[in-house]
Amino acid sequence: MAFMAAGIATCSMAQENSSTVDATTGATTQEPKKEQQYENGQADKQSTEQRVSRFMNAVSRLHIGGYGEAVMTRNFYSQSFNRYKYPERYSNDPSHGRFDLPHVCLNIGYDFGKGWTFGSEIEFEHGGAGGAVEIEAEEAGEYEAEVEKGGEVNLEQFWINKEFWQGKFNVKVGEIIVPVGYSNAYHEPQNFFTCYRPEGEATIMPNTWHQVGLSLWGRIKDWRYEAQFLSGLNSESFTAEDFCHYGATSPYEFKVANNYAAAARVDNYSVKGLRIGLSGYYGYTFRNTLRTPGTKYEGVTGALGIIALDFTLNRWNWIVRGNLDYAHFADADAISSYNQANWTHHKYQDGNPHHYTNIGKNALAYGFEAGYNIFSQIEKLKKKNQKMYVFGRFEHYNTMASGTYKSQYRYTQRYRYAFGLNYSPIKQITFKGEYSYRFFKKPNNNGLESDSPLYVQPYNNEPSISLSVTYQGWFL
Image (cartoon, rainbow, N blue to C red; front, top):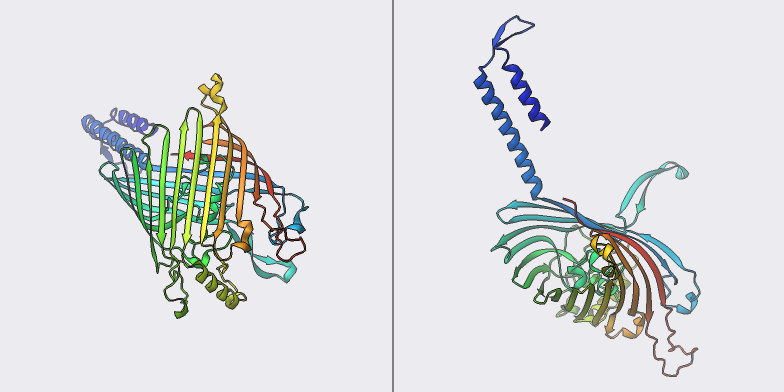
């Protein structure tokens, strides 16, 4: 507006004179007539307004947002990696604390018009990752590469979407979220009460699960659907303690796609305040690597099937959520044998990115949480739209629910309950506090004496206290 006002004032001053004299040459320049000056001013004004209009239109199509979590935790149990192998040695270990940034994400999207949109999400896990080269005075001035900060940086989403028939049908291609299980489809921090994402689903499946692929999705009345075509997971990255959690990652600059897979999800919203979702995944996982297993493993596919049911009820000042996930891994014994053979062969090789552990035949996770907004009963706070949820959660998960090696990994059968508070002074920000207690089912030793080599020691329980602050929203 200041530029427009300056242009109008200059035009008015010019109308008072019909000619000007150049101070250097002395030449006289005839000024345009008042009518022409007026027309030029109007044209400049219109041009400025058009530029402003185009800029505002472009900004209105741009979307910038994100979410993040900062967490402080005190764990009242041993942090030794051997605490499950020799639990009796670590039963009296001191507590330890942690500060963490589990996820900090930036979303950028743009609406190109005519149904074409772009979306992206870059995620910094645990504070990102950093490295630097330093000159070490203590080492005769040698150059030394050091890791300055742990964590990971991931391009979690990068896709182009074309909409048809007012959103009833869409085609999306690129790096997309695989919405199998509740915690993948709804992974933002305001979609769960705990300071960290629900442990069960985050352990037995990739989380947040994202891959390059093709998605066909849409919403018709009270139904939302999605079907995806993806590259298969890699069984070389499966582990006893995390099942297929690391299967979607790749140590290379590309994702190997010798095998393909399909994922699907359906959500129903017919009942007010209630969403029920059913999702699944199926694909081969063996040979989805650069290594060739050989003829000994002919016919081994490593077929992986996952089915998940979840729901959310948000009504009557209650939020209730639940999930049930079951996974079946074919050829688990054959692939475990292959992994062990590779471990023996490659264990002294630098840079080996794979774990080569035994793998369970089945994995299971279920969880349930409920929270009540106590501020709904305080009229003053209710009018300000402030919320305080008192919540409780229980979950069980087992990455070795069945299989030949189940008895060697009894500690993978875990239970956990948590309770605490979620306070939201405004919609986008939430402060969380929780006490959690992870515990293990005591093994049945069938009357064996404690000095028997077959006697299995019970594992130490794992309580903790956590505090966090989260944000989630669109800035533009």
